[in-house]
Amino acid sequence: MPAKTLTVQQRKSIFHALVEVQDSHTFTIADSKKEVATRFHITKEQVDLIEREGLAKDWPPLG
Image (spheres, one colour):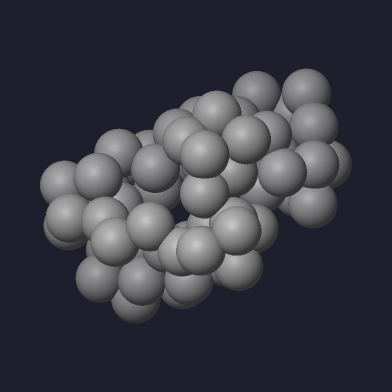
C-alpha cells in the first residue's frame, strides 16, 4: 500500500485518536496502532512516525 501524504492537521488528528485508543486500555499498544491505521486507512509505519512526531512536538492531548 503506498503511503498517503498527510497534512499536519491530519497527523494531529491521527495522533489524538491514537492517544485516546491507548488511554481506553481496550487494546494493547500494538493493537491500538493497528486499529488507528485501519480507521484512517494508513500503514502501521505511518502510525509509528506520527506517534514519534506527536510525542516530540508535544501535540494535544499531551500538551
